[in-house]
Amino acid sequence: MIRLLSLADVISITNAVFGALAILVLFTNIEFKIHLSLSLILLGLLADGLDGILARFIGKSNIGEYLESMADMTTMVVAPAVFIFYIYMSELSVEIIRQIFLFVALILFFSFGIVRLASFSIMKKKNLYVGLPASASAIILLILSYFEVELMYILFSTVVIGALMASNIVFLKPGNAINGAALFLILLTIIFAKSYYGFAPILLFSAILIYTFGGPIYKKFLEKSQ
Image (cartoon, rainbow, N blue to C red; front, side, top):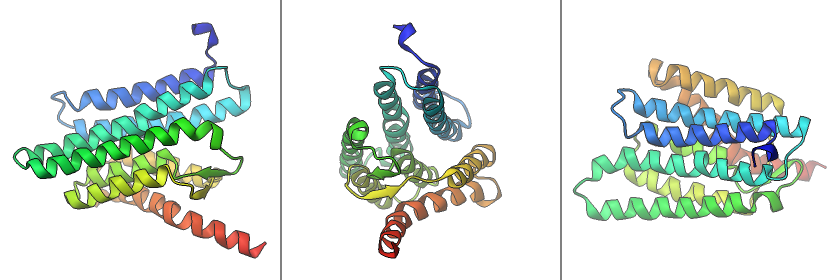
């Protein structure tokens, strides 16, 4: 089976390993485990971008697409859901109703994520994404929960972002300049965490939010101008 793997597949596995480690560190006694978990997920997202680049240059193996979907499920759906659960459940230890709301929201997000990633290979287009990319979805929810916003906001965001992932809304694929800016902001977030008033994760969050809500509008504008 190992002979079936390409270099891009190895990077996909690395992506999944980062996601799995992000979950496991939350249940350790490491003092900075919240930021470490966030950083590992972000590193997984970078690995996901790298495996796509390698696949374009050196080709994919026969199991490449399946492996990538499994890795993305770990890093962009399961790990963020556990991250949110870990942060908010400690605040809801005696609030059963709100716990149920959190469970329902995360189950919906998980279900939308399965639909998104299972259908990605048959719905992908050359220059477009159908549905909000799982990477953008993960970043939005991770940073909201990283700053521990009110539960009602995280519940609403989890369901809405999940629905956008599995929607038919079309998003433009970002170019090299935008991807480079995203890489820079992700690295800043990993390095600086919440230092200096949390400027790095806030900038990353703002950039992804602009892409999420501005991307479809910009696409419509381009269609009208042609």
